[in-house]
Image (cartoon, rainbow, N blue to C red):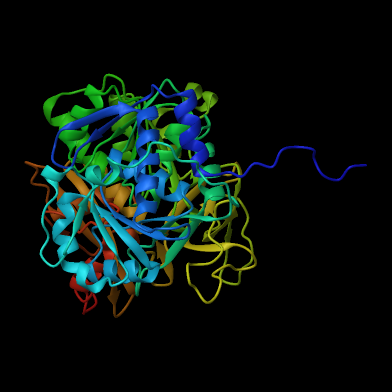
Length: 544
């Protein structure tokens, strides 16, 4: 009997995505907000042509397969072209978070050994500050035409993108190579010490992008118009720039304008049906709709992740605005989506809205290709009973095995330790309870900062909330709550604490409330609790 299948062995490459999109959905529209304001509009077929021109232009600059090209850019069409031109040529697309500290940007560009940096004009001040400290970078390319390319002090020659690709040939034969070849590089953010690099293969990205398209994830198809608010510099925008082209859908790229009014205007004008972003983005969008009495005309569903979406916000989306929220989970080390929550037909028909909201607030089931489990402090696997809490472990087709240039593998018995505290229910639904560094231990008992934050945001006068554990001489740690009030609301500390006392255990109620005009938010939309700890970590110096 034959032991191997008699099938063609074709590598899974990103160039195959752009070629498929151009051939089968060439008229699908791509709409992009330029960094300087106007909308740019063209087709997937035209995008593919320009990607080939860029591939030829990069080769003309002396870049070769294996070369690393950094991007410091918003979600726009030129950045999209670079996604395919760089990786499709066998080079590595290194997306950089522009909100990192300049010293961290310098570190990751040098660590990646980037030979070229492409950037949006709005980030010219960043380039001015880092260029002299990145000696291996031979080319600086502004993603603009000549009229919108700034001169940058200290950088001798800035190439502008349009002049760079204009003379290049439209004919380019995408090379074929092993699908495990490196395609993209993304560094962790919000960690202690230097960022660590996750080097994604073509295979990992393609498989993840295909999975995102299925109905049990985001259900992408040629009938959809997709607006990824999640940045292309953050885990490849959750692989949506790839998945959208696989699906043959319309792609809408918002550029730098991510405020509520701008996003709503773009969604309505371009008839967006699907979007994706972190909860802080959706809070600003819903606040705009609430303030002006607006509704969505085409939006049907959105993916959210990065941090827990508050129940009150889920209810707004689902009940008031009729938008299906799909809560997912992933991290830099998982390429993109690893779990996704979707309501079943039976749950939609038989459950109360409150029951559905509570389920949506969880991070869902692992998608095909991914396995998850939770373990205790000894590494023993905990039961899937919905209450046994431990560290979330993950393994699968697109999970990191080793950090870029790392000396040792972070895996434990073949599983990646995520640093998240989670529970898994008997039906496989996973819920993040906290980060190992954020969970609060008080008097030997655990308090979930995420659950406290969600409860606080349920108050009608609260726009955003964050909770940290503060060292306490008697109880080890006690929760401290930070509140950003909604505009025009005068909610008080006593009112907040009384509200929480009716919703959480007595010993969970925070010892104090600090009102802020805004929470410190990082480049991926997550609240920077480390900043809050630095400033407020000593406020409970004496026991209550």
